[in-house]
Length: 284
Image (cartoon, rainbow, N blue to C red; front, top):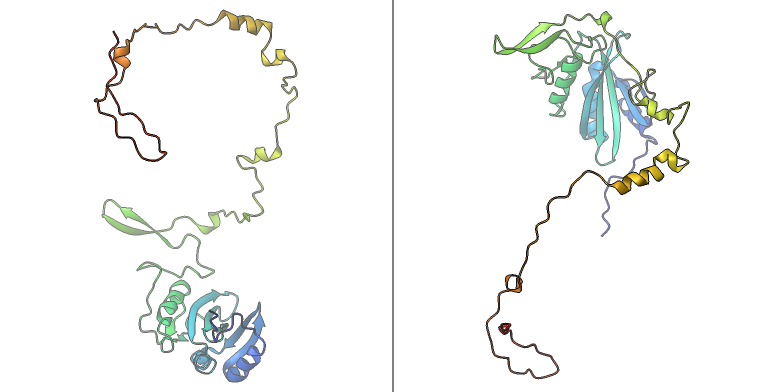
């Protein structure tokens, strides 16, 4: 049975950018289509209005994700990225807004309850503060963690390291002693391979080149010949184990006799029958 659904299998972007830009243009800093996606750059203070309009007037019912991005060279270095999905249109749209470290972004927990967890993740990893989120705590890093790991200026080793102390019987935090300028990183692509030779790379060059290769063009090269045949005829010093002769009588190997039973009555028809088992006669 064929089932028809209101949402198309593939939704085109034709006309979507113009329709959305016209509807929310007053709250936007820009709109474009890039890499096959509709991207709207909203003003930070109007992000809730833009998202509510997309949800209520354009059927983008579901908030799929809130992500962060860090551009340290920009005056407003952080971007908060909202990804919306329309279940009825089978179409997605991306809304972005920018902020700096001290300026909060309005929370959208009043539009989508799941935004609370997503905003906590962006706060934890980037340090973006969301105004109106009633439970803005770290969600991925540990309690007492310092810094935000997804910032571009966050050190690769972090600020502290943790270990289990046998003396205190608990996990303790200690400052990292390794300076960043003393670290060396290997940024080689796994598809390009290393510039230096790794163990096993010599096998890719084929068989090793030798000055005098060993060949077996004649029987003498393999060790065969008259001398080898004479040694084979002489045998070896290995002695087989002693063989013990055992005599076995017929009585010892004969099976147990079966009981005497009379023959069954002949069957009707063409089906052959067998004789009943009888005790074999003893040999005189």
